[in-house]
Image (cartoon, rainbow, N blue to C red):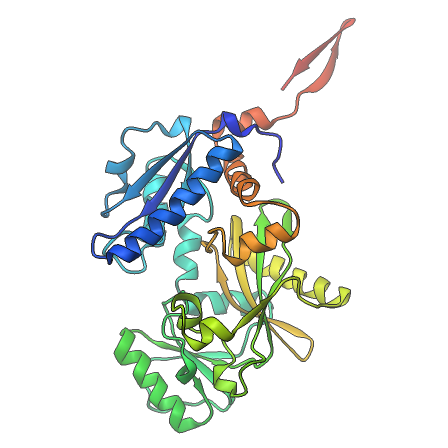
Length: 355
């Protein structure tokens, strides 16, 4: 982990999106979380300026900044008004020659497509639930139940409710039809792994650090259809899934289980080309850890699982945020050069320092 670049030497642009069409409550929540992150970056020593993106023209919001002088903390989920566009934010930053935190545009675009993700995991022989993509509810050749049906190109658990878990062929056809009609995209059908679920945060590039896994405790739910992280569990306070899924940190894993989990996470992180940080959703069944999802632009707000896992290791939110900035700084020409350690070379009777 890069810890030797002084934060005071790395100015930060905290880039975040605010959609004019959001409700005022939604805008207020994003601004509050962003201000919180900005303040801890300042507390860590970074000169920080907050820049909201309110349309699809990232360049116009950054035209007063020189890419040679800043690291962009990419806090954007999308371009306002454009679905599935988080990769476009990164693409514009790349075209503008900004160095930014987190995954590049190729990885963000890749992980939006569950078909491509599953194919890469299979090719790399990384355990992931058996799967198939359906473009029609007709002739559904599938025989693994229970199964779960997801929209192929959504994230943040969009389309994931208790009804997404199906127990027979008739339910499968109905749910595929629902996804096709509701989301206007193919349906991903997977073997439903009814087992322990872990959200695992990974940091790093050349060297990877696995933070303590956060376990989702579904013990309140007796019905198999309810034992999953739904959209409600993440975004609807007061809903049953939001209130009744407990989080266990630290989770109870043996040393052998921990080693196996870490190896799967590292392999998946590298296979998908993640950078700086990511969160992986993993399930355990019959001593096999299955990769459900990989999020290279994971929620890193103060109350999210990554910050909680970091806190468990003694790293507070300001330290975590600064660490992410300093990982990105290693890719910036100015700070990458500063990172090089001088070495000694003999010349005549004198010793000099050279890069």
